[in-house]
Length: 230
Image (cartoon, rainbow, N blue to C red; front, side):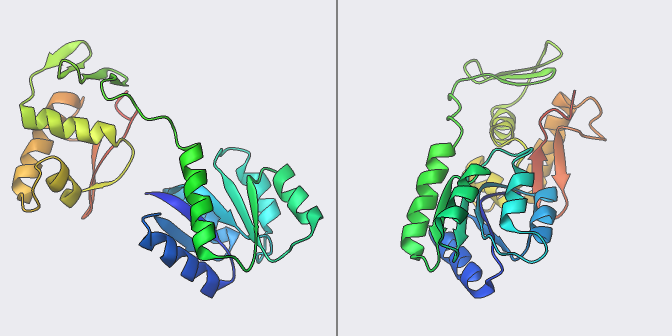
């Protein structure tokens, strides 16, 4: 699952309050209290930004920052009661993007986070750009889908469903989200969705009984896994 922000801070009350405040203002946030749990988080999730304390149990925020910078390029904002210039210089030199001293104003910190998320957000995908995933090509201008060069005949709803899945590739999409954004209603039946998913798999999967692109997340919904169908 993709979050806007991961907070890594062993001051549990402050971290929880900050996380709750961010979530209230639509910055999807998860909170952990040590780097061990942070590494576990990244096994199954991702975040667009880190709020990282320095003094943490087992592994310091400085150590964590250096390690995560080896394979992830995401903004890191240090939050710490340590206020010496040396700490700030170290934090910025090892890959931190900003440094906020504790105690902080939740409102000011939220504003900083929103600005940073906007600054580092990937450029918006052009509305009419091709989606290509190995042998599968979705052409939104002509509303055409081909697999291995063969055009697939999809109904309007099947095409709309596939486009929504590919537009949100590699993200869990709940059934309710599909009902509201594809069917434009909240009370579409599971049976209707299941039929459309089955027909899409028959069109785009090499083995519809063992789908690699449109995968089921048990009891949750579906995810289009980019690159898995190659």
